[in-house]
Length: 126
Image (spheres, one colour):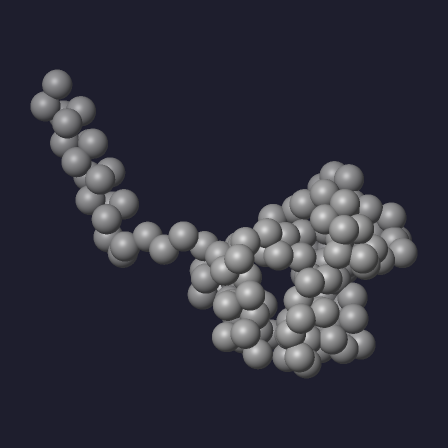
């Protein structure tokens, strides 16, 4: 499932509603919530395997997750029946945080560090 999710996310700006519709086994009875605030629901109706796959892709920095407008989900035909998160706040009741998933751009290991070192050397020379 992890590979299927990654291949689908390569398209860019993928909602969890799209993944629920398109990836076999994605749909389930679990809610994916923020660890720091359990009243912020990222998505509901996911399988444990789907949550584990997305969290693994995030940990491996293969994908990124960013807040998006709720209209993205409306266009996909699924909007949870919760108030929408509007700010970084410790909500007392469940709120939904609409997000989009994207593929991370691969950066060659070590190249960013060398550029920083070169910049530092140039500052020393001036």
